[in-house]
Image (cartoon, rainbow, N blue to C red):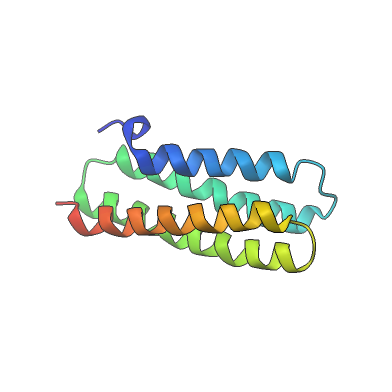
Length: 112
């Protein structure tokens, strides 16, 4: 399976691009590093899992991606509250992150 064809990979990659662009000029490098690592981890783990041969490994990497999207959601809430993330961007990110999380959950449950 080529991960580039997976809707969940495309959407998670687009989310990461949006986050990187929105936070490009943020000077709090600790926060910026943490939130960008978590969102980038989603598409990266989907890609890595898709390239694995064994079902157990595929599920593991997709599970890691699901955990990373949860981490990203938490950081987005914080970013909105402290003023680093504009509420309109944050709300869109949270909606997309929830959709990605659900897609990952379904994918994990059907991998055989």
